[in-house]
Structure formats: structure tokens, C-alpha cells
Amino acid sequence: MAAHSLDILAIAAHRDDVEQTCGGTLLKMAQHGHRTGILDLTQGEMGTRGTAEDRRREAEKAAEILRVSWRQALDIPDGRVENTWENRLKVARVIREQRPRVVILPYWQGRHPDHYTASVLGYEACFVAGLAKLDVNQGARGQESGASQNAAAFPPHRPFKIIYATLYYDIRPTFVVDITDQFEARFQSLMAYKSQYSDQEAGKDLFPAAAEIRARTEAMARFYGLLGGVNYAEPFLQKEVGLVEDLTLIPVKSI
Ligand SMILES: [Zn+2]
Image (tube, rainbow, N blue to C red):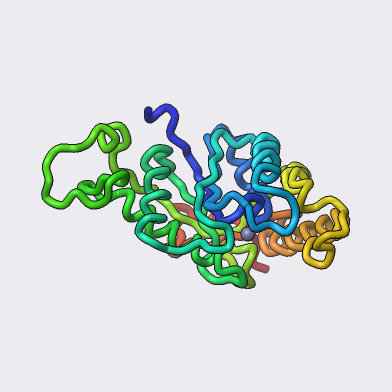
């Protein structure tokens, strides 16, 4: 089972969130030999354009472009991501099954309630997934002894590291990942969502045309690239401090 564990799992509210916020990083990690995955909390049934089924096909195509090994969407209602016990168990189940070392969550503030709620929900699910006596399929087992078959198959697990993708919110990241070589593929993964981003009349104001998306995506990646002294980058935040072994190897020029 350990052989199939994910190294990195990105959790986000909507299909195409990950493509926008950390798709280049996921592709880069896959190119480095890491096993990556995406958990979308919702299926996109509230989208202005297209159906949840359209969205599923597009998400599969995008995952292929980003060389993601595993992708799944939960059945949490689109536009109504709530941090309930039931939803925490749903996410915790996935964390126990996929056993990621690193989890990428959205940043905990933002415009869209689904995004910031997904952040807190994801964090608390990581915590819950590590509770030794909790059967995530049946709820708390209390003092009852003996583990169910599922609990035995998927023992408690907590990721070692949780980082936050901050692209949706204007906050200074604690680090950026150089995606200069992945930028083009990441853009193509976003364009895989044809029902969202191709030129159409419906919802035109809400979903600008591909050329404008391109300009916007490029400007953001360039901005964070400049902060890191590279061409294109994606921004992240960690709550912990950075640990340094050798001062001469700290990247990013000061002066
Ligand atoms: Zn979203």
C-alpha cells in the first residue's frame, strides 16, 4: 500500500482551482518523480456553463496534462462547501487512503466562501485523519476495542506538511515555486476546461475569453516570478518557519 501513497495531494473546492493556483508546481513535482494527486471537493454542478459531467471530462484531461497520478471529486454541493463533521470525515477518508506526505490547501481568506472554507475543512480533515481511535466510515468509536476492516485497510494518517496556495488572495507568500518550464503546460491544463474558457456568449462577463485569461495568468505568474528572481512562479505560504542548514545556499537575491 505504501508504494501507492501520494507524495503530494492538492485539495481544492472546484475543478480548475488547482490548475489556476498550483498546477505548475504539481507538474514540476511529477517531473521530479513524485506521485501527485488532486481532490476536488465539489463536482461543478452550479457552474454557469456546462454540466458536472462536462467538468469531469475536462478535469481528467487537465490531470493528464499535469501528469497527476490520482484525481477524484467528492459530492459536496457546489457553492455550499461547509466545514461539517460529515465533510471532514469525507476528506479524512481520502487522506487515509492516499497517505500524502504533503497537502496543498487553498489560503484561508478570500472572496469565494467555498475557497476559504475548503482551507479550514482541509486542515481539520488532516487532523481528524490522524486520530487513532476514529473510524472515518462510522464516526467516533469511543472506547470500543478492535478496528473495523476499513480502519485496518486504511490506518490513521496525517500529512507531514501542509502548505497553502495563495494565488486567489493578495498576501505575500512565504515561498514561491519556479514554474518557468511548466508555465505553458499549466496554461493548457486550464484551457482543457473548454466549457469554462472558450469564447461563448453565456456568462461572457464572468468568464473572459482565452486571450484575456492568458494575459491574466501570465501577469500573475510573472509577478510571483519576479519575487523569486525567476520568470514564472506560483505563490505559497507555510505557517512554520523555514529551517536553514547552510547560509550560503539560501536562494533569492537580496540586493
Ligand atoms: Zn474555485
